[in-house]
Amino acid sequence: MADLYDALGVARDADQSEIKSAYRKLARELHPDVNPDPHTQERFKEVTAAYEVLSDPQKRQRYDMGGSGGMGGANFGGFGFGDIMDAFFGGQTGGRGPRPRMREGQDALIRIEVSLDEACFGTEREITVESAVACTKCDATGCADGSDPTVCAICKGRGETQQVTRSFIGQVMTSRPCANCQGYGTVIPNPCRECAGDGRVRARQSVSVKIPPGVETGNRIQLSGRGEVGPGGGPAGDLYVEIVQREHEFLVRDNDMLHLALSIPMTAAVLGTKVTVETLDGPTEVEVKAGTQSGSTVLVKGLGVTRLRGGGRGDLVVHIEVLIPSKLKKDEEELLKKFAEMRGDKSGQVDMKRQDSGFFSKFRDAFGR
Image 1: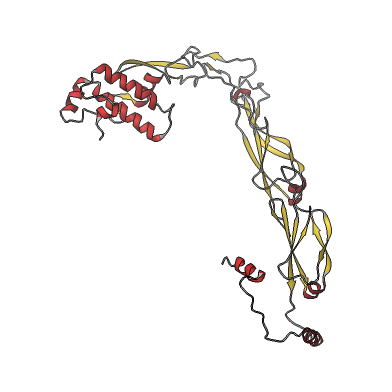
Image 2: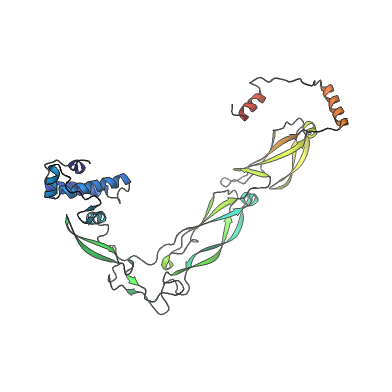
């Protein structure tokens, strides 16, 4: 256990006024409202425990003689830790007054799915939201027809009650929210049957949401004042609409870029061709140049996704896969053999690539070497 004098930062011969002054200074610095760090709160407890012993002449004498001094841990001589904070910092020493029945409502969150087309070009949706709305039966007052709130008979409208407690630092007056009126200062003797005195009810409402072009999964759209109405008809919070984009059948999105895989016959790759592919903008013709290799890409400008910020659109990347036939008819095989002879290609002949060749670099990158 740390030395109690060191905990307060005073000398062992310090008088009571020095001990009290040191404690007050440290307690104000270490109060959880000033520094909520858990380590600081533990330090505050340590300082308070030290003061509880050193401020009592008998406990201090026992401690100086080698005893524990009667340190009380969580409760200091019957005076609670929370009461000590109240006594020194006025956290609950009155002056707050009754709390209002009308308070701000909470924010709400709802997730909606959109297609890739809707995410790219934007759209407008009508969604149904269930949340708290003002009670129309009582106009959000919480009172039944013909009745009004009455002043609390216990706290006389203050919203809090006071209690005098004796402690090692003398008599301390503390305040607590009134249990009879929950701190409001008034009670509702005849609550509205519709909302049970809360001033709001649960209901479904239709909300129009404009989804801007370029949104993607995780983006949130804020609708101010469309969240839950607060108790007592207080101002509504905000509604947040979170976007979840569904996967497309054959297009893959990467930020503002779109990717499409296309398989073509070997002959088309050798001779070149033009193919029509489906895009978000409808059928589009893509040119495949003669001699295209499997794994090559064709870039189509401006057919990607709209950029959420900055405008414009990304590109479409068409990935080419060359299909090699696994079986040939006899006449097809003969034709290919003649073609190989014309090119001087010999069966079993290979071309070993150098490490600095483009082919080898792609191979190495593919396997992370």
